[in-house]
Length: 259
Image 1: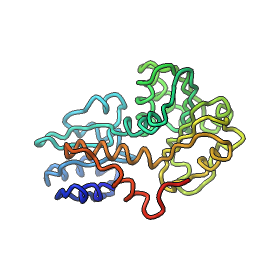
Image 2: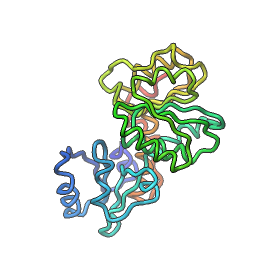
Image 3: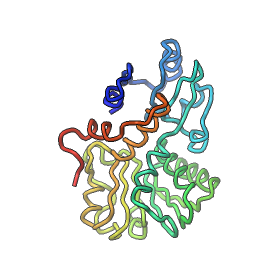
């Protein structure tokens, strides 16, 4: 996706992936400094820990307490969170009115932090329920949400189906669905006309998305967030408008958008 964007704008840049073990994060960051890398993305499980090895944090990173994008500004490594924009933009495109909405968020990791940060900037949300396997992580994220002005409750992940029927927006920020495993929320637990947003982008159509379609809910695909957060990162690195359609075509390939 990023390489397609570089090629489209004739930029002499290349995007490559590195696998970094948890205990090698600091060493890896210093290695990137030594080669004067222009910028990079950070994914799970490093979005929180990477902050301690950066020189500056943008307001977005401070708000989400997580970093997914780093820009090298004349030797200064500055961290950003483009997941915030990436998450909310597909909802804005659908003209979602958050007034009185009840939201169920599955997960409490780095992506969930961006979701909470993004939602805290919307007006009128009635309640945010955070469902997570680790109750301490859920409570920590709930406190973050409360500090940002949201009314938050927490529950165990297996308690999520109980809250799903009353949710106007269901967001999955867990890895459930990446290996084609069944969702913990079935079609009968999804309200008709509600919005179901799965941050998993591979496969494009997860079991949760299938259930949402069957329930006649509005579907938001994970690839939409992926493109938007990537486009914002591209703009930070280059200072140029991102060629979103080119990035989208590269991501979705010859099959195009799902129906």
